[in-house]
Length: 128
Image (cartoon, rainbow, N blue to C red; front, side, top):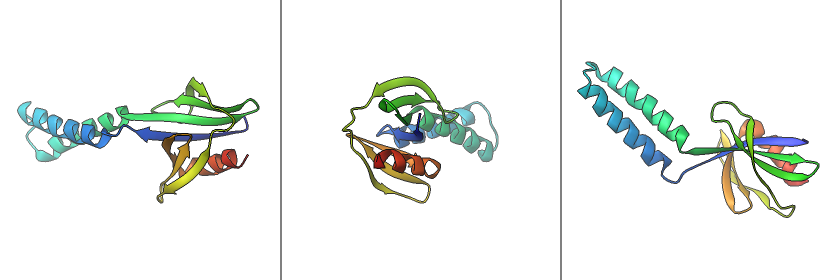
């Protein structure tokens, strides 16, 4: 493997799932007898974070001697766990935007967020 970049994309309704999980768990915590609002909100935030993570696809794009390979990645740690597909040699890789924390990259027809820690690897993969 020459380069590898960790990236992710969220389901289009991931934010809605997170908000609904938050609201439902705050209600459940209130019905279960949690007395303080701080505790109820903490339970809701934890549930919202779990729902957001569940609605996110994590991937590792690797440049190998055989070409580009896309792997499914772990939700907890940044490593590849399963081969998803081998990408065509003509697959376009293009940076299309970003923020202070992550860059947006177009990989073929799909859009992914790439952490700043992987952006150098992604740029090296795209330049080859």
